Image (cartoon, rainbow, N blue to C red; front, side, top):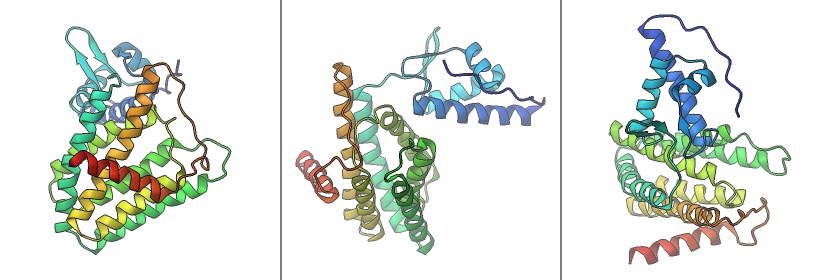
Length: 269
């Protein structure tokens, strides 16, 4: 059982309640996505209030927002629950991301400027530097920092899209996909492969070729989903998760990526 967070004084008033709701939303989202609150677990208001030191009203508001974002299930007369993992839901997220993010990146390319390019390159280098820092490290990586850099890169690709609602929906789908990646993270790609895949994606988008960018983004989203589906099937069958170290793969990053792209071409024929 995770120890409750330290309680802080909650000043009265609408502003304080809004701040408490934002804090509850951030902490609940973090713990659901990371798996600290496990799939299928009931989210009892009394326990959540004790765990986070936040009152009932802002906690209910946070749960309602997370329900709208698909990270919490509200059951009739049975309260709230963390959604379970399922292959059907994973593929729903995957295909939705492919549809929406591809349109968003096309719009981003149409409205792009030099600042958009600079932010993509900067966010890629921050992600790459994190992986280089992890090479040979014995300590476990800071998952939250790594995911923050990863999300920054994917946001940067779509940042020039002028439709705010589309960008926000892409964010929601990305966070749902992240939960699957973190909870099934024993599936493995080497660090070199991960960096290579993101470099290919960056170059395709920066080429401002809509067809190439859409193809690279669609393949990137599907490659991850394919591996997650395999890991989900193994865990459902009770098989041990596969592990690989950073240097365990004999396949080159480009070869792995090309194989994923060939699978995508076969699926779309």
